[in-house]
Amino acid sequence: MTTSFDQASADLASQVAAVISQADGYIATGDVKSAIAAYQSAGNAGASVVGPEIDAVGFSNDTQPLTHQAWVVNGQLASINPGSTSQQDGLKAQSLADTVLTLLNSAIDAGKAAQAQAASGWSLGKTAAVLAGVSIVGGVLTYMIANRKKTYQHSTRMRPKRISMSYRKVPSQRRVSTRRQLAM
Image (cartoon, rainbow, N blue to C red; front, side):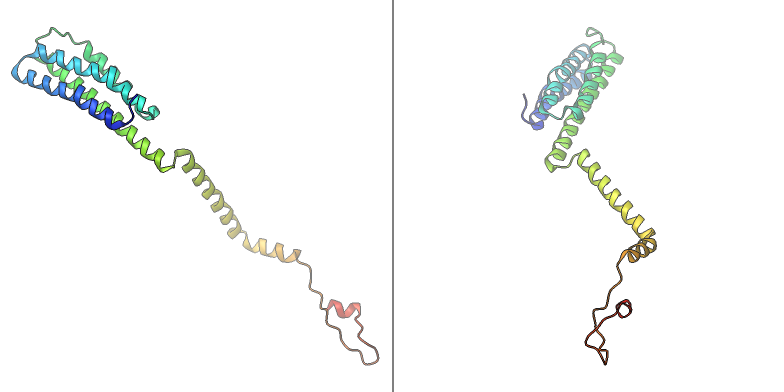
């Protein structure tokens, strides 16, 4: 099992990109048969070795759609007759091998991005929860602001009336408080 996407990237460069570069040299000199064989070898290494290596690093939900697509394209590359000397077959093999390389590089990039996101501690679920919380608080505040007059009136009606505890001195009596004085 690979410990990092950097190792997968190094293997992709040595097992796929280098072989594609060699095949490009063959096609430039007109050796189409050797070019097709090299392109097929590069595609096979990418799909059967490097692709699974990328998925094994982790975050396969992000990498596997791309590595699977590289596997499918490699199937098309493998269907080209390896004994063909047609320039058209050589260019088709070149295009398919480049597509496999591009897909595997994209899978590594997607895996690195997922790894960085996981390292930051934020996931899509956490982000959704925060946004839901903010939406709820915003909705409550909007409701309170829109209905503040009603809320204020309702809350003032619920308060008990203050009762004055001051006593009035009545000339002929000691401190006496009557009901009527309390209601004031």
